[in-house]
Length: 174
Image 1 (cartoon, helix red, strand yellow):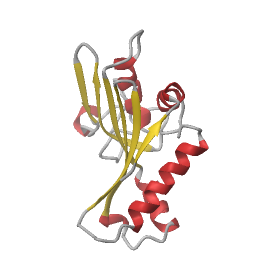
Image 2: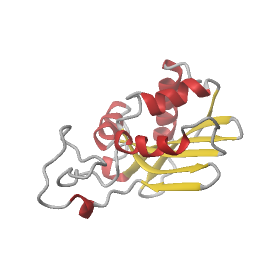
Image 3: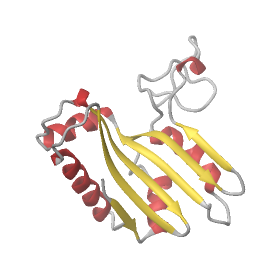
């Protein structure tokens, strides 16, 4: 786990909310604190979608009303959740706190584990996570690996930390 200080706050937030840069992640949770606090649990409620409606144009359910059967994922994609989170932070004043916890999508996780020659199976890795934390004018992105069982081997953590650093540096956020 490494905390990366983001110096270009405006650029990073623009990429987070206004581009597809993070859309391959799933949304675990979000919290926005302004004059009130909003917390969003990213777990999908499949029963909300109903049984007889048709699937959305993009092949995934979205947050509209007639979106058909739920997608297979347990959590919302960032693409689905970001409009809801963004609606809580837009305005003339910065929030007191914004926290967004993202997890790399399942297919990308499998590819990453293969690419770094990880000793862990995809089933043994719960998630490769990013926590975006903005508070008191400071923005940090924290990398993290969640395993099903404790393991002293930290090579996967180091590989994920390095991948996150590269991702941030390629976009000039570091």
